[in-house]
Length: 224
Image 1 (tube, helix red, strand yellow):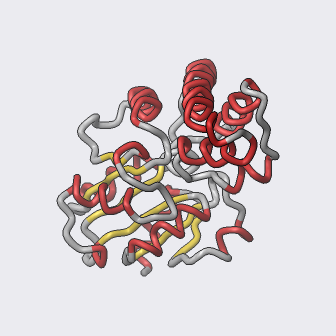
Image 2: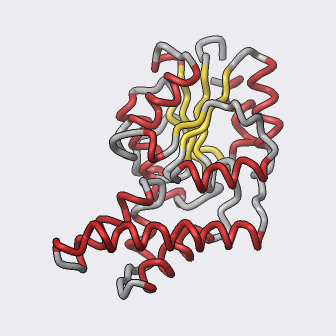
């Protein structure tokens, strides 16, 4: 525990409950522009930059000349639909998250967030949680490349003033989260089973620990 300065948490499915709003909004936005993706295809990009994922689907189904305009249209539609779904259903913090944040801070360990959402959607989510708005936060539109690239983690470290990946833990619920943690070289690369990734999927990704949820993190850090 004394070897960790910073813990970086993913948002949807890790610290904020994922009630299916993201894949629902994603597919609806694609369909509104005459595009489609299977649940499996959408599941494969969970944790990725939503803008980049949408662009990949558009590139597969539309002529090159239309990719830019259609991608922006679909992305704007996705953001609108997701905001509506979250507003209608409410934003729920995962059990044990607030307690884990407080436990870490009591031990002088910083807390930061990173997410595949752009900042506009993230601002809506964070406003509903009541968390400190000054919390270090790395969003998809802050970095040149999303997960599995390590840049979200590096940017969160930069915002928190953390100098060494060897004193950082990253926590997420998807294969891409764990791949990003591995690529960043963090000391603890922790998967949680509270979101999109199944145990079988996360077991096949590089990881240090797999936990039921963020609420189980304090005990795991004490024991390890």
